Amino acid sequence: MDFLTGRPPARVAMIGECMVELRHLSPDRLALGYAGDVFNTAAYLVRAAAPGAVDVQFVTVTGDDPYSAAMRGRWRDYGVGDALARVLPGRRCGLYLIRTDEHGERTFQHYRGESAARELFGPGQPAAVDEAIAGHDLVYLSGITLSILTGAARARLLETLAETRRRGGRVVYDGNHRPGGWPSPAAARRAAEQVLAHTDLALPTLDDERQVHGDRDAMACVERLHAAGVGEVAVKLGADGCLVSDGRTARAVPAVPDVRVVDTTSAGDAFNGAYLAVRLAGGAPRAAAEAGCRLAAEVVGSPGALLPPLPCPESDPAL
Image: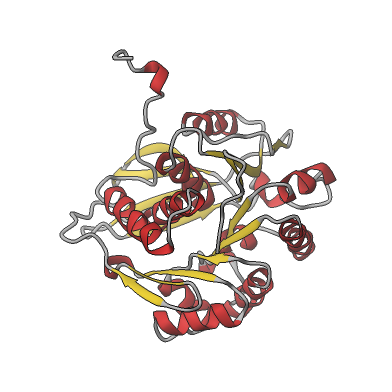
């Protein structure tokens, strides 16, 4: 599958939610940040791409509270645009807390019931936003994106994805699954299957796919996704790397060995960002998977979801 459009920079719309992140430093001390699976991928895509190669816009809804304003400023620090992010007066952003164990594995507690992002693709969303999304070269979303939408909003999203593809754009889907966001695995499965019918590239994690779809192994996941019409698949396998397939050949790509794991938060998001950066630059799926594994290995060696933003070239005193 060719992601190149011949019109650099590649225009990418990332649909999802960004939240206040509170990370435990100790039982009674917390560090404040801003993160969310789709935003994390957006930030890592910008980080992994060559300067000027991508124009990444984050499609979401925020409140007008001080944390929402600070959060939007953080997007800009990471080179992610907010031209398609609406503000709802009187609303707030969601919040989650992270704990990590001695192995770097994390657990989450989410507080997002009143999150403004739940209004994505709702009746208040201007038609111009859908139109703008459909005009992008690549549109990205996740299973968590689906979990915060109403049934009517998902239907509107599907129409936008179909229009994106009619215009020559590509759709990328990561089936990232949080059980607490769904009434049942069956509900998550039905929503995912609807999106997969409009998906060009799938970037699932095998543990999630087992929970939702019952896949016994990575090859079963690949075969199911190709049967659903997805042309390209990269199944993330954690410490075992990934399995990447173009529908003709499936190749195992190993993880970086001997990595000291501090915090596994956002490892999959980092993989996705680097994978997309390579594919948008014309690289092959295997090379994209190798880049994804390298960036994921770097991310798990640091606490929190996001590595610090890279300095802007113009701020470098050596220039």
